[in-house]
Length: 455
Image (cartoon, rainbow, N blue to C red; front, side):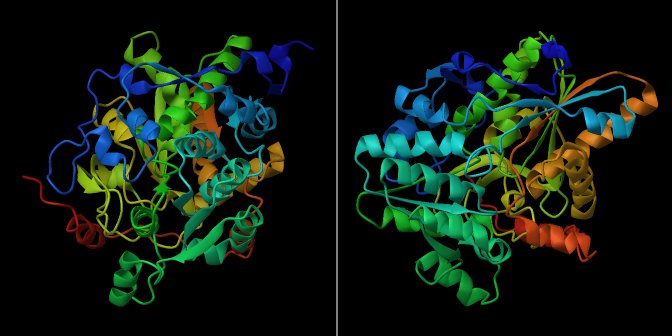
């Protein structure tokens, strides 16, 4: 059987990328600079030193197109990478579509998601600097799990502030983090000033990623020899995640394919940002013109209904301000099961690409997402994470459009993780207890009121 006929397209380990790709190098217009909240002036790398490891802060501002992957990081990557590119032939048959559907599967590691791609380098650079402790936040738990694995590998103690509703929905994620010696705190909590203020205002607050970020950052800057690490949104994270797209591009070349449509779920932007990198480079340089689609939950529609404005990355307004599509740092999303997509803002890079018309966006309701997830699982044997299933929903929709038009397009989507720890969500779906929700205009306006006034 030729490789073109194979379901799984594996890349030889020797072909694994040796450098990360930095999309900032090729953007004709880069995102507006971060602002120092104390001065409202453009931030410099050293402004981030109290929060991040110095090398990570420098990567946040890097403009060179490629950055070498240190061998210590590559050695760990080789334990689970390259990840497979899979042709969804059974799904194609079910849909009776002329489209070819490929997905890049990132769930083949202990964290069950793409998050380990950035967790490893972030812990590595902190360890190399001599940092003694790390803090972070997590929503659905993929990032917290990945960071717990990486922190344990390098022997760095970790405290994870887990969004309260997600901790209650996904207790086994907490168990895995604790197995890898991480300390897990439900957020908001009374262990920080930021969390205490939030609970005083609303004792029933279910939390959000913005809330958990506030607590994690506060804990980092008030504890000696401690730094904070973030699993999405930031430029450095999209840099590390670019290994997804670099591998996918090589794998598609092996079967003489190039995607007409690229789809990824989008909460903060790490998964989609990593997948689209080299393809967006081709698009910017005029070599190709694929449609690239960000899929977000209707319950937290930062791109499709948010404002393009400067905002804090956390609810406590501790972090530097970023120009991004946002619902306002004070916005608390509803308790949907795709906890990793419950973030008020979007990566400044993806926000700029969307604002400039290089990226499309759509939002979907969770019952339609789970319809697609179950259909996919029954035909491709992988139970997807609720976050990843947003991309599946749109991939199915696009494949059905191809059926109507007769166009044999090539579709690539990111399957960013498995849903083996999301069984409570699948139980609710099977029992027909899932509900759909989208914020009203009035609720969005309340969130927009939390936007900072600049100038």
